[in-house]
Amino acid sequence: PPEAEEMASGYFKRGELDAAEAAFRLLTEAFHPYAEGHNYLGLIALEREELEVALEHFRTTAELGRKMFPKRISKSRYWRDLSTRPYMRGLRNQASTLNRLSRYDEALAVCDVLDDVCGDDASADVHRAAIYLNTGKWRHAYTMADKWCRVWPDESFIAGFAAAQRGDTTRAVAHFVHAALNQPRAAHMLVGLRVKGRPKEYEEVSDHNAGVSARDSLHGYLARRSASGKDLLRRLLGLLELTQLIAELQGATTRWRANRDPDDRRAFDRMTEMQGLPFAEAQAAALMKRLEG
Image (cartoon, rainbow, N blue to C red; front, side):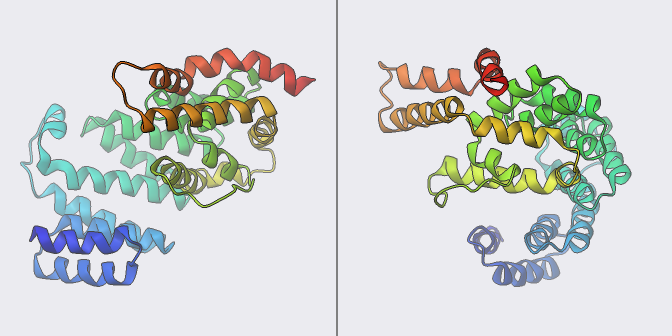
């Protein structure tokens, strides 16, 4: 029943994992097959760092979800038919968990299913980018991350790390500036720098969660002693000029949220300009000079 699922998901969102687990276990037993229930149980296991347990639940999610729609279905229908959602969620979460388990070949195989069968090239490419970075395939990592960073700015972290490893400092700086402007907390978390204050506003919470997710998914790369991209990002974050740009963007965002006057778009226009990759690219040369000086 919808109200039971809403109650159970509410426990999960509030971080009441024991209550959420008990509720979803009851629902999966009472209303078999209940694919979404297993997906939630997998997410709960992930929160507890029980990766193998999570993986089994995500596999069950996909198996049960696949039975919810016709055997023959075109790629285009995967996005239009809501019955495919549990199956696709199960696959995406499998890819993420296998990456965290360093089972990279298996993760890439799941990505191929997402891409070739479901037509979900976006999710497949994002997971591939992280896997390629973890396994030292810098060119492939950069290509995948650069393709989607205009949609998801956190992909610019991967693009920046990959570019740095290839010796392309100009592209690395541009991508790091893009990522840091959009997700300054995540940027600091990835290089082990402290972030002042607890996240409160929606953007801050989202930024923090992105940092946690990136730290988990890029574990293989971040553990490398030869990860030169980490040093470059850390040095960039120490520049006053970048700190000022981050503060300016946060100020524009605050002004826009406080006054959404359709006749005064100045704050909104500045916010969207600074969030884009072209703006970061325009700042890269000056910031590189500061790093070199």
